Length: 257
Image 1 (cartoon, rainbow, N blue to C red):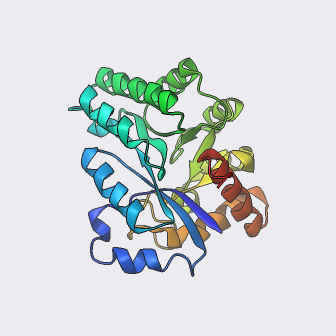
Image 2: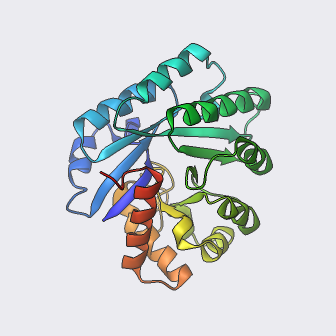
């Protein structure tokens, strides 16, 4: 049973075949998917997907790149939506310094605000962090979020930074990049990180693994990620599937259900 902890099936790239694709997952061993949101419109689309498909859940929040026009009223609306039983996390939230806008100060403001919201509603957080390693770590340390309640999605930093998150008891989201021939840094991270701190993800439709790099990604490609992790950690592929399933169930508080 494979758990895709971070996908974007509301994306327009799936408009032509979304239903056929999603209905193929069970036979392929894809048992659960968490669809992460980025802006207000995506939250509405994702909540509708959750209604239509029993195996799809939501992480709702505002991506740092979409935080420029965010208001407190928007976040009050999001907090109200957290009462939905299919909403399992706040995300994806965080910092993205790759482009100059929105300004860092705005991103940090809304990142901290959404972390506090997650505390109030007692949900874990799914973090987007790009070119913002130290600020992200500092803010999360300051927030004192409990062990097991943070996923650094699409982890892209060094093994030293990974070790800092492991010390805090947080998870690292690992996807298709680990299969790339030039992904030496990420392979070092996977090798050094305990399997108990790793979550499987696609970030689809983006970051398809080899041999499908450059094409539209989907959860059907996760066996390639499993294979790469297993080879890097000298583990059995089924053990990687089982361990990451247990990790995801724990992170998203689905163990009791």
